[in-house]
Image (cartoon, rainbow, N blue to C red; front, side):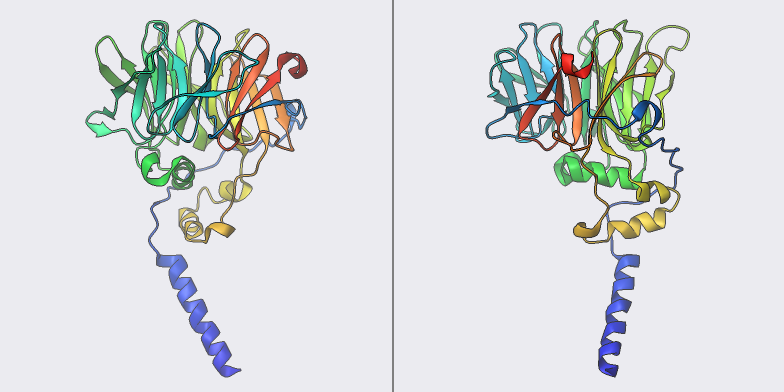
Length: 363
């Protein structure tokens, strides 16, 4: 018995040493998590997202973002690097081109080119004939590490986000890299603009905790960017008396915001990838404990819960639509694209494109 306890003490000793000293890639920063409203008020639990239809994708998965061209064809960016295309809303997705990386956010410019935020490569342009051109691979001489979302303004300028300059997507993967960045909370994200006319890039906002979705307002007066790690959407002014400044548009969301897109009637759609984690919020001001958690085996680390959730906000940050599916028929929501008939919904993990008839969404 004595030998058993001695062995147990030795094991516990080395376990403590491991939890205290084993090297991990993060260096957590103390911060204060905002109040979590939970699923109350404008976020009250409902099942309005439960009536989705699914369109299978053969040989690919993770349709992160969805875009429509001038002819109404539907495009989605997948984990395997493919941009898949549907000729119309009743067709099935077919593989169009492969970027050789991991395309995330996509949007069309005024010349019919598909602009792609590729997490591994940078900012790409794909011509209608499928020719791929790299527009931006570095900013200020530093290679882009995690190009995330993109939106093209009416004047041709391209606004895009770099989610994390430290936890590079090609090194860690998009999901693991995002989890590392959120756990560290080091402010490695940026909102960037690229002007194709001059070939120049400029950083508009830096120090963001996982800069994510990007959307230019219909009147072109501001651009929105989702700051996933701080559960909020920021507005950067492009004109007017506040030109060149930024401010929160909506804060203290009950979940992690991913992509954002302009919809109909002044709506901006925000995909909420997963509910907030109470344990991580409680450890926001305890960086040492967050570092210890990073040393735990993957099987017992805190996990993101699967929950279907998208919202729409107006130009004042008011929630004007809230669609949920607690059963998560389409989990890990990453983007919403609104058409006259449907809401097309992206996901990081599904092998299908989800869509919800607007008639069933109360829109």
